[in-house]
Amino acid sequence: MKFNQGLKAGNKKNQNLTFAKIFNKMLQINFIRQNIDLVKERLSVKNYGDISIVDKLVQLDEQVRKLKVESETLQAANNAASKEIGMLMGKGEKELAENKKLEVAQQKSALQNLAQQLADAEKLLYDGIIQLPNLPHTSVPKGKTPEDNEVVKEAGAKPALGPTAVPHWDLIKKYDLVDFETGAKLTGSGFPLYKGKGAKLQRALIQYFLDYNTAAGYTEYLPPLMVNEATAYGTGQLPDKEGQMYHVTADGFYLIPTAEVPVTNIYRDEIVKETELPIKMTAYTPCFRREAGSFGSDVRGLNRVHQFDKIEIVQLVHPDKSYVVIEDMVAHIEKLLNTLQLPYRILRLCGGDMSFTSALTYDFEVYSAAQQKWLEVSSVSNFETFQANRMKIRFKDESNKTQLVHSLNGSSLALPRIVACLLENNQTENCINLPEVLHNYFGATTIS
Image 1 (cartoon, rainbow, N blue to C red):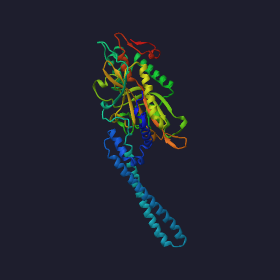
Image 2: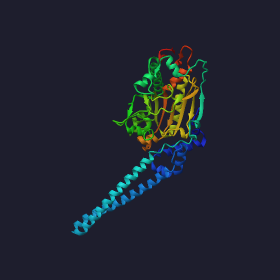
Image 3: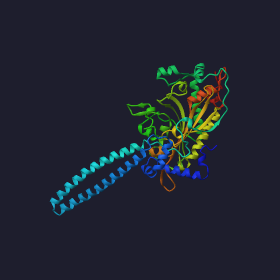
Image 4: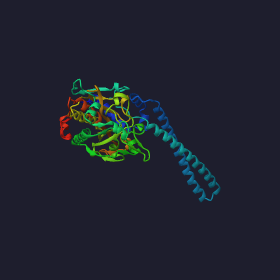
């Protein structure tokens, strides 16, 4: 199934490819100035709060340009006057030379004032630009809430559980898999302590997901779990998600919310060869998120926690191929869910439910039979050049022109809700049956 059907249909294909190439200039004021109406329209799809910022940025850019011209003109006059002083001194016209020195001194003072004004204006312009989110792709549906997301596919049979079926937080206690109380004692609420077969199931899933990804050509990494500010800025966590990350203030480090952050930054400030593309990477890491969301059943058990395990896939690709690659990544994750025999659906996120950095995002949700609700387990996103522009990840094309790559990432997969659904959907009176693909990794066919 081709999820991004707009990219495959007739003339619209060319329109969308042109759109993608245009957005190689995203975050550059030249692009904003030349495409004011387009930028405003795309920001409105993402429900950006203050569209007037676009006009303010253009005005700031005009101010910066004016100050630069004034500064360059005055600097040229200053250089000419300085040269004239030497000529006057050579002719013995000391009085004229001294007068010219006073003029140069005044010009230098004016230059210093202009330099400060220019620095202030450039900082205001930069601070404004980095507040702008990535612009959504033309295929992104309009909408403000998750209810406005578009279901593009639903597959797998929802299991019919018996009257004695219970949600995973009860199954966890029954089979002694996770100790939330001791986790809270050790750290705090939302930090589960896996034990026994619960810990073994985590290890089995991690190993299976990594093997699945590496077999598909992804190179495995084991990155640091803390990153510096430049790394967090590169993938767009800063300045958008400060409140969601744990900050080690003494060192200025941040605990990672996802392996996407360190892994994508591996190629920061590098120019790769076009023949090296696509660059495919995968990594397992614990992930840390301060904001755990709402209260009630949405956060019970493993539904939403502050620390969780996740395997990520990341690709750096040629700009012309990123919308083919995102379909490949969606198919890759869909096949993985099929091997786990879990019912799932794929959503195309609306503008209001997308991340700050994404141009297009598909979410995967699996069905929790005991809770009778869909739980998100993966997001697959194309960031186009938004991240690459921040990180300066580039390549040289056939004409030796330097271009920005497109970056993409996806969860493959996040464990907590996968575990919740595996437990709930496969429960019987006496045990939990595991999908066949996990038998060798877990060393048993059931949890009992």
